[in-house]
Length: 127
Length: 241
Image (cartoon, rainbow over all chains, first blue to last red; front, side, top):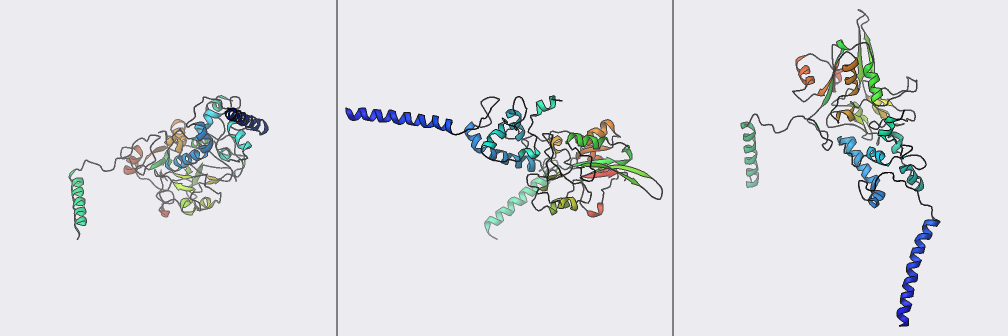
C-alpha cells in the first residue's frame, strides 16, 4: 500500500516538475514575438513551415526564375501578402513577421535586398 | 542482327509510315497561351518587331519600361541603370536622321550567357534572356560581352522595388521582355505604350507561331537584325533600318 502511494506521489511530483520546467523556460529565455495577422492556416502546418519555409522558397525560386512557373502557393509574394504587418504593410521592421524571428535567431537573410517587403494591395493604395 | 534490334527497327519503320500517312497530324503541338502551372516551352520564341519608319520622336517606350519595372536613377547617367534607350542615327553625308529604341535583343546564341561564370545569365526555354540575381555575383563579364550594351549594373542600394521585378545592389540587369507580363498573357510595357502613346511601331509576339502578326510580317516584309554579322539570331528585329 505504501509503495503504491509512493509511486503516485513520485509521478505527481515528476509531472509538476515538467510543467514547472516548461514555465520556467518561457520566463527565463526570451522567445521571439511572432505576430500572425491573418488566419490559422498557412500553406503547410505551422511546425513544417517553421522548419522548412526556406526550402520551399528556394525550390519555388528556381522554378519561377528558370522555368517561368509562377505558382502562387510557395511564392515569396504570397508570404508577404499574408504576413505583412497591419500598420506597416511590411514583413520587416521591429515587429515584422520575417525580421522579428530572424533577428532572434541571428539569421541574416537577403531576400529583401531585392524583393519588396511591402504588401502589394496596400502599398498601391498608399500615396 | 539480333531479333530485338530487328523488332525495334520494324517499330521505327511502322511509326515513320504512320507519320507520313497523316499529313494533317502534328506530333508537336504549336504554341498556345500558357497557364501558371505550365513551364516555359521551346515551342515558343518571344520576339519584337520594331518599324523604325513609324518610330516617332518620343520616349514613351523608355518611360513606360522604367515605370513598369521600377527602374529609377539617381541623376547620374554614367552609372544609372538603363533597360531600354533611344538611339539617334544620322547619315553624315545626307543628314538623314533616324531614331530607334534599343534594348536586350534576346539572342538565340547570347554572348552574355556564354561568358557568365556562375550560370546566372541564362536563356529561358521560350527565348527570353534573363539574369538570375540569386546567383549573379556582379562580375559584369556579360556587360562587356553584350554587343548591344544592353546590360546595366546596379551600383547603389535600391528601395521601392516592384513586387514582380526584384532589383538589388551588386547584380546585373537588363530588359526582361517584361517576362512577368508575358507570363500573364500580356504584352511588354514598351509595346503597350508605343501602341497607346507612340507611333504604333512595335509588335510583340511568338516568332514560331504562324498565326501571329509578327510571324506573318517577318515572312512577308524585309527586316534586319542589329549586328546581323555576329549571327546571334536576335529575337528583336527592325524594319526600315
